[in-house]
Length: 107
Image 1 (spheres, one colour):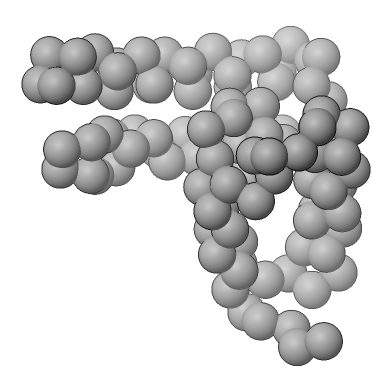
Image 2 (image 1 turned 45 degrees about the vertical axis):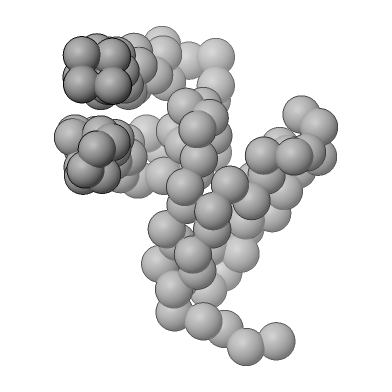
């Protein structure tokens, strides 16, 4: 199998049940650890973004642009029930709330 330097992933796990989604997220992290490609992942799942990403970019629509960038500096594997995970989740949700407020005003 070729080993690309960049993988573009647009909602790759969105249609899966929770157990399969978690398994495939773990598999993707294993592939990343082995081959270190750059991964660009689009997701609407905040927890998925925190588990997989080192940097989360929140976008604003009309026109589409990056509204906020949040660094994720948690050790791997990431513990979804940790206080540090909750802190990052709060920051992302706050950024999304700001993007949603702009959407509602301009929508």
